[in-house]
Length: 550
Image (cartoon, rainbow, N blue to C red; front, side):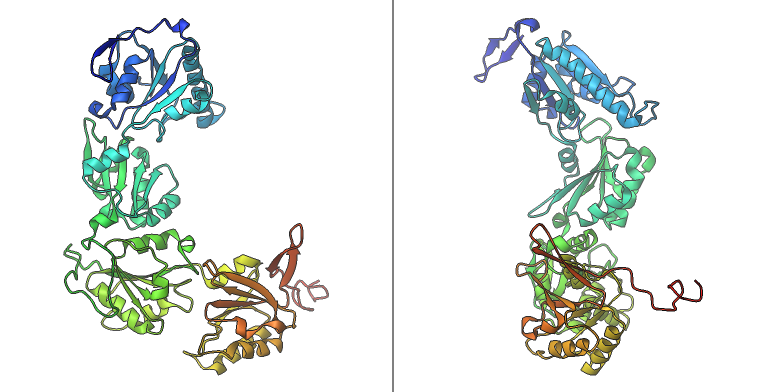
């Protein structure tokens, strides 16, 4: 045969007989998404030089990979069709589907190994890219450590789908998520809810599940469908309008870049209380506005739930205390409205006003928005005129109490009470009465807002009240900035609790009479705290020793 040199001139290329060449070389050849003209020059060259062309197919014998490369196959090529024993049907193999497939891959690898041992060059054809959800990888894992191997990358169906849609997949700091449609619906929903942009592969029979997951994730309106990109019979359209009965395996669902869909080109801060009147509606003819109150957890992105990530990414406006807004990644096209921590009512009304103008608004809280945070303020305002018709959702977050408890073990393992020591919104007399009641009931206590620059005596007074009910050596967990760069978690005796070591960023977990502190680790340098789930039965209670029922 002849091959063109790098200088462009024709050179003779005579290959010695296979048996005189030693072991052969294995190639995984990516063919691209379907259009033969999208094959790389390297892929065409390797096919031309190979002795053996292998490709996968279903039992009907037709191979998409072979059809893509057909014009480059020679009459003297040795062809090795690798026919799947099962695709969508059932199998009587004793190992089930996985057993049948493992046996098939082992047998296929043995067939290719025989050619390689005879000195033949073997090219395994693969649609798209060989190592991207491709069958070639099963040959690669079984042969690449035994024979010289090269993988020829190919244009993926993901890139082809984006090109055919003419829509950016990701922009700036966005993250692209690629998912198989075979995942369970709950897992798909969670991952799609948190994704900036996404592509779901392997549709076909999974399409109804994927569609439900996209809808549950709140992304159906912008989801697109691409079938057989660059191939004959290509089809694109809105995912919501696609007939499930018409969807083949070679199709993908695309959730394109959110940035590309936003009218505002760059993220920017806006003074709190000022609303840009230019783009009050979303242009759809409907208001589409809503307020989602989200909890960011005690610190940064590691503490966000998938649902919260999705809501933050979808929002056009972020409203919140500046300290909490700073935890949210900056996204192009979003407007951020930061404010002081003492204007909760004003912040809630401002967010609702934005939503009335058709904006999608996320009100950002630390921890869980329903625990001493913004959900109450938003719902209070939203339950009065003129905001009764504004949609409001509350998404949970990891609370400071749960985060601090996890750092030391399980001090909240039994009944516990949550109280705020701040007397800014309720009198100290109410706080003291509740402390007495909870301590008298032998509940573990999670104490929020224990102190600040303007409140310096509450912790000391609370310690005095608690010592009337608890032993001096009751463990107290001091969790400060849990999950943040200044995290500090300490365990002290109740009698040794020092108010000077407590500020607004600290939460206190006060043990009950049953809470245990123990040393662990090889050197006993790890301290853990837990509250047993069992509680001693009082004499005479049903089921206790000596009770009338025994």
